[in-house]
Image 1 (cartoon, rainbow, N blue to C red):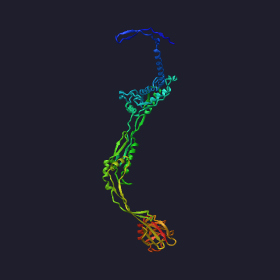
Image 2 (tube, rainbow, N blue to C red; image 1 turned 90 degrees about the vertical axis):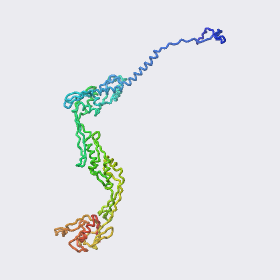
Image 3 (spheres, one colour; image 1 turned 135 degrees about the vertical axis):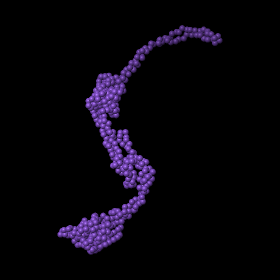
Length: 508
């Protein structure tokens, strides 16, 4: 327990408010605790501890983000670098790599480095110029290489120090940049390709194509491969032969021909249609005058159609399209199937609104569709159908002609004699001959007859036919070898009246 010490008494001084002065007054003693001595602070020791901790932390962090000492990527020492710094160093290494290219004849040498004024004098006569990976548009995924190197050789991994990171860079070349750089330093190694072209030939009425001609250049893959090899081995310079390669035209014969073929197909079918009928065909030369060819950046072609030019033809359409209907007439069998057309029916039609036709057709032609279907109102033609058929009655020896089920004519005939009876049944006319020799000239052999120039022959059942007979006038009696003999005037009438396929019924 802390002892209490007596503190020496001191007079209390009080102020007399009446006098404004101080007057000594008696006072009692007061007891207080003794003051404790202040401890000394060791600031240096306390500051040193956090500084050391920070240093240790930084070292730990550094060991985590830095690449191990002695690590190389593509010939670049990236030890102690961050991934970002290592990536920059590798990229710069590639950009600075020298490429020496020998011409095909062994006399042209092109050295890498930076493109400069010396390029102006470069040629294939042995003069030298400078090219670098950067000039060739070379690139590599340096960030991925740096990340791979750090992952395999981190700073904290002591066993990885001074070890080569097993990474394989893949170099890419920008084709346009590399070609332009090589062309500048060695133009003699290049032959410009010639694009295919096409024009409309009015003589043939078609688009014709002039084929493309391939050019020549330097094989970029061989240069890329050599540059990648230098990067892998860490070499700052590499030599490679200028390997020639074919440089195809940007507008190939095939591509231009495809466009010409499309346009020629358009010309084949171009016109204004009513349904499937090309009512107003357009001359190929006229249609070609509507087409405007445009050359694309790569030398290929595109095309558009001229609305104003099309409109001139649209203005003539009413006279070419509008018409009244024309009624028709056909011959049918008893089932209504058409056997012959006497008069073809023609539908009437009236052209509708054409205010947007020209623009719509221009757009359609540009898309390769040559058939513009016109807006028309169609008035169908009226077609009269007349059914026809023939009946031969053997008992009556008479032939009947029917139209729409009504007899329009009848007359006597001569059918086959006994032993050569005419066959009964339902048949159709299958062949018609205006004249034919019948029988066998050698009368000693079947059918033991020979008749020349039999008129108006209409076969209906094998060798049985309806025909005219000029060698007798005994109609109404059997006379033939199975055919139906008719008077000459009636045979001519029936020949014209009965179309192919007309039904023939032979009955008793």
